[in-house]
Amino acid sequence: MKTKMKFLLYAIMAFAIVFTSCDGEDGSNGIDGAIGLQGPAGTAGQDGNANVVSVLLENQTIKKGQNIFEIPELTQEIADSGLVYVYGRGANPDDLAWVPLPNFDNGVLQGYIEKIDVGKVFLQATNADTGVSLRFVLVEGTIKSSIDFSNFEAVKAYYNL
Image 1 (cartoon, rainbow, N blue to C red):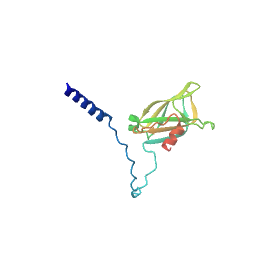
Image 2 (cartoon, helix red, strand yellow):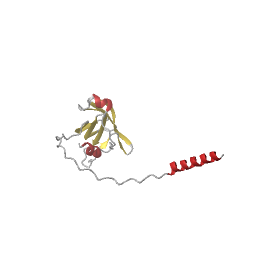
Image 3 (cartoon, rainbow, N blue to C red):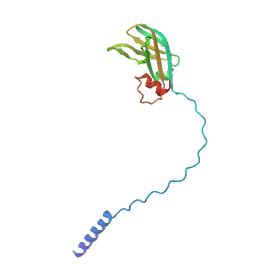
């Protein structure tokens, strides 16, 4: 019994030492090394907005119903996996803002993209209009962005259009 008690006492002491031992404080960090030499300057890249094309059609006549617009820049790749955004602006000098399609006026649908095909965009309009400017923004499917595409000015600024 005496040996069992000694064994138990030593086991408790070993347990206490192992689980209550202190961990030393970390020392202070050493000084940073010297800054290396500056590498050679790279060649200047070309400014641009790869994978995005903006096409402006001015003074367009919109008829009620289907309207087809030829957009040669609209490739098979964009039609298959990209995005096509259409913005419109009226002929009235007060119409300075680009409005995204689909467009609603007083809750009534005015125009929307019906179909996209290689080289063509099909728009549906509920009213006829003349002197309209349309801007088509074509984005290849590789772009990842959190941009607000409902605001043309934001799109213009982001893609440097």
